[in-house]
Structure formats: C-alpha cells, structure tokens
Length: 216
Image (tube, rainbow, N blue to C red):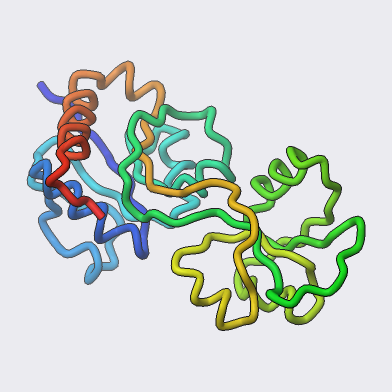
C-alpha cells in the first residue's frame, strides 16, 4: 500500500510555474488552488495532496515533517538555513538574483554602512565574507525607499528585471547568488517513504533534463 505524501507549494508568483511543472509529471490538483480558501488540496494522484503556504512557511512545514516535500525559492532556503532537509533538485523556475543595490548617483559612503533588507542572515553572511562591518536594518517591504530617504546606504534584495530599482534611482551592484526554486524533502520522510518520493524525484529530473521542456 502506497503511503500518503504531502507536497507544500509557495503562494504567489511561484505557484503557476510549480503547477505547470507538476502537470508535466501527471500531477494536477482536483480544484483550483487560486480560487479556493482551502490550504490542502487532493490531486490526480491518490497518494499525493498539495498544501499552499507562504514561502517562508514551506521550509518550516517540511523540516517539521508536516509536509514530506516542498517547493521553495533558494532565497528562502538560504535565509532559513539549509541543514534541516534534503535539496535534491534545482527546478529552474522563478529565476532571479539576490543582489546588493544602491543609488545610481551615490554619495561618499562611511566606513560602516547601513544595509536594509528582509534577508538579514544572507546579508550578514555576505558582508562577513567580504570582511566588511555593516549595520543591518530589517525591512519587510519598500526596500528601494531606504537609500532614497537616507535610512540605509545599500539594500540586499531579490532582483528580477531591475525595473523597480531603476524607477527609484537605484542600480544593482554586487551579485550575492542566483536564485531559482528547489525541491526540498524532509529527512525522515525520505527514509520512511523512499519508495513513494524517489520515483517522483526521478520523474521531475527527467522533465528538467529534457531540453524541449520549459518549466518556467
């Protein structure tokens, strides 16, 4: 008898490409994930259900074993810490960059900069690797406003097209890491439900390795 699996998906811009990728391996929700207030959904595979969560919650549910697997951006994994689960696949969807950005016409900077970001751990690790001492200011949104108002000298944030930075007089400066979405798996689930999880990983890998496939 096959064991039940739970796969956690991230709300927002990653949801549609994630569902498209799952559809390519014959996994489809039995009702619309975007038009329902439900958080758990049955699928075309009897032994697999989907959960739809905030990106930062996906890794928590996977690490705690509530979800056996999850799809989450590498930015969330880097910020959260990557030791609590396996990361078997780079799914290649939701591609963007984790960048340092600042004003295009930047005044002279002090020896100890202020850096605004919601990715506090990533920023700390990056500047420590550069041998630079900075003061981190945690923000949850409106990051581009920080250099404009003098709250911070630089920001660390996700950059997609760069249009928002440009519109606010900022430019990307230093690349911290390229970002894509990853499949993560609970460590105990991988051991206890290997016969259910491993075939799914292999099917996804086949699709990702197929040059004619476009999961993004």
